[in-house]
Image (cartoon, rainbow, N blue to C red; front, side, top):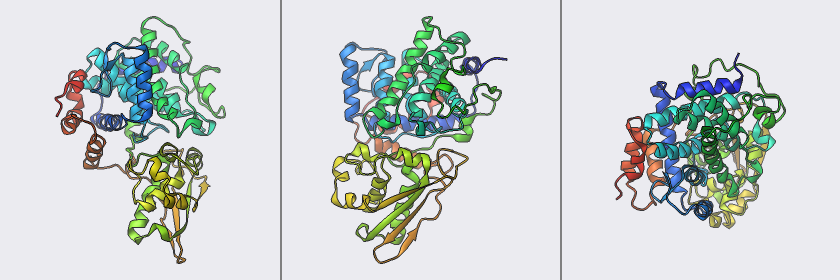
Length: 454
């Protein structure tokens, strides 16, 4: 019987030439569109400029792949580093598998696809391989990596993305296996850095490390044949409590596709996804009851243990810190009836009314578990008490709007994409959207960076 690392390698190798279901392609297209939108929207964030300067200092010459589609070129790993950091800088990118799959997979695959001249169909196959490997690995642990301090996007993303890049390059089984082992030793990222510039850098490093792992494997670097399942290997090393199924066969890998079950959840708000259910509820209540923010005496929210742990900033002082604050999310939803890019600023966070409302928000945790995403409670709930004594109860909130089980419409997705690109000079957003909507028909992904500009 093959070990887990070997099984994963064989799956990656086989997926490189396999047919993909149209339903899976549709999910992947959505992830690509959303990621490119958030990537271009985040391009002016300070962390992106820092990473660009870091890359430029060591690589002054043009390279293989485009930076932010239209802003120069770099070697593929460095382009992926910049692009993934930018795509995660606003915390507006999609969610699944207790992390952010597309923000790692898409920038790395676009960079390598440009270097290779690969097609849109090739990218879809590779994304599928990366997603399924990520799902296979994270689904083997009974505990939540966030609570241990691991950021799954940085940890599982590095290995899953290496699987995707290896698939794109159609590596043989030995090289796929070595790439997984190399990537497993490069994975890392701490929840303690949420709310700082390092958090989006996690995504950049995962995408970049994945490309480096694959290219090192292509040059002949070896890794342990059981690097994933060994008693001192990847799964055990990052397991919060050691309750990980490292020896269970991966018999259904590629047969029952996780992407068709878990899908991708598209964010409506550029803030940690753990707050989205509550934001929906507060905005709905405020609109339905015509609640004036100054009339709110207190707000109490019930959320899951893991979301409460991730939403660590109870009195944020900056827009970055506010992305991980339920108190801010509630205050913004009441004051502005929105939690958008206009509210995620240092100035809005410092607003006296916002700061006053944050002090009136309290949180309780519940231990129920959502079977779709076990890191969440089965339901969230919000209770708003007004100064006239009235209490408004949101009722149970099952899914946030945009969740894979409560998806946005195609019109909503397009609106988000165009909004993300509204401040990008010269880019024809509608043309780019239409091209990405027919991703599987794109013969050479280099053409995305060659589209006519306005």
